[in-house]
Image (cartoon, rainbow, N blue to C red; front, side, top):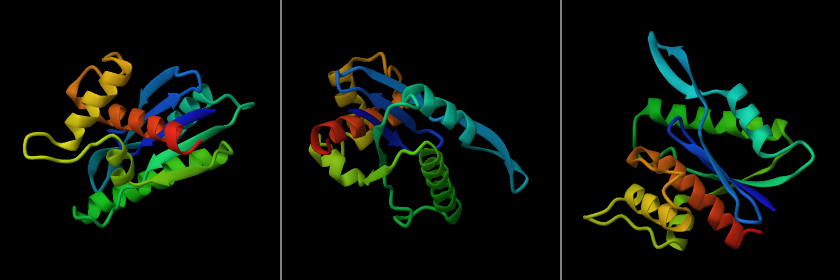
Length: 163
């Protein structure tokens, strides 16, 4: 079964993991929008629709698993609102594609891989390291690709535990 792992957010990503182990990873499609007099980035629903259709053809189905971040775990009201809006856009695009979304907390999938914040290493560094060990550096060659790494590991977790 095809798995789509999603790290939501404008710096997030989608990982398409086939039953045969084939992996395709894409940054979250974004667009610029005017918000409160400033230009901000937001998830591009049209770009996301095209990406999902290219990764999951209309005659196929997939298990879509998205990280369910707690929007009340600190941060500004703007950050919480932006994250909720992003999750709503992603859920809507998936629903329009007739794909259900399962949610997984970061704690669950990170625990599966032994990821835990330490004084010397944050969870983003650990995700990058593990994703690179599993699939090489091609999918997340730069430090800024931690969203790709998270999406990969979410898909891998789902393949091992939810299918």
